[in-house]
Image 1: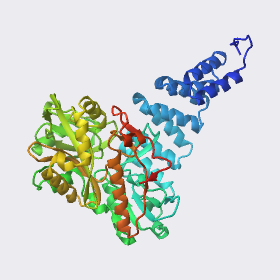
Image 2: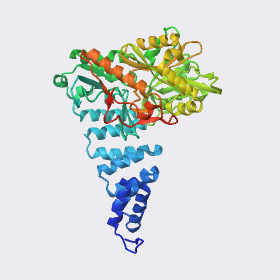
Image 3: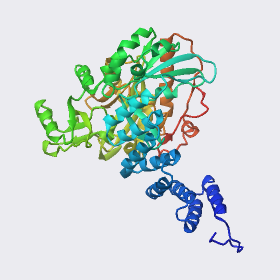
Length: 531
């Protein structure tokens, strides 16, 4: 080795490799990087040195540099699945390198075209760059290579057996850099949070019926069906496909597909427009769009006599990142990714801004969420921001700058009537009852007039016990999860038990959590505690 030690003894490349690996495993990426550089000074194309350098740079959050080095690794080891997987992860974490991740995932899939996980991963990466049709094709390929049932058996005494019905193709796959895996949108995450100690879950994609039509004859005995196909806009085809089968099973169903089918944005507007004190913004669909949609959007707005400002987003997408606001016809410029066809939703914008003595110089926006579970309302969160697209990320800084809003959000979770008033609560109840869903949620904003503006009402909203949440929301989402368990056992006609549920962190429970940061659970606790 070219580098002598302090005692004058020379060390070997193998010794430096071992030292670098120990440093990396011991949480010392700077030291590991130094070791990698020593190796590469002696052997510039050392595969071990390049691997060590890529991982060390990644741990140091030097993602772009790590990606470059990992590409060199894959040139030396072009068909090594593990290294291609690392390349995909590093590329997907860099906003400008999404297509590099796609290319690497294409190579990974080419090595085993029938592999379920590889098809799903590639579909998720295509979904991330807006190629929804290709994502759906790959999801169908994944469904064909998958076992008809995936079973998660209870760890202890089995008290409930649930068939989770979902769609792997007729939704939207997305890549999640935090979990380094694919996320199926168009559903919610509630089934992943069920009591693992006592609940057995059989998961069946509706697409399995295309490849294995006799699958229902092999269906294990279950107590209740949970339809996790939750988005009428994204998954209308899958919901329609399930209708001929679901009622033939003779098993109680939570969130029947026929009800979810009605919960599209247009359907929600039509069902809510007659409710007193409820504003459901007008929405129209623009179908089968490709390329530059600007002229088509302007014509659709004019033909339907919509008023500007308008909000435009792909029909299959939720989340504020996909939403664009145009205040006048001449501002409209909307272009889809090359080769992609999308249906668009065009919605009239309703100004929900308000001013508050708690922050007198700011123009503010609020978003409240309630769940309805078997007819009962459960407050979930209150977010206040200075941006019309209210999100977790842009609400937390404002609420920390003006702590009175944090107290307002906490009071809402403890006593929503005291914050909103009985009239608003009854209007929220009317909205959620109109969905005809057993489990659903509504996002809305109350106006000074006492009216409410409904942003969306559907079954696709997620439980924040898994994922990001504001520091004071954990207990509210535990209550929602417990109520969902109650709903399942009531429909199944089985006796209850003390559920073992994921819980907020100790710091959240004790009120010592850092309120300037989002709480982020990458996965549910390995050992849930009784609730």
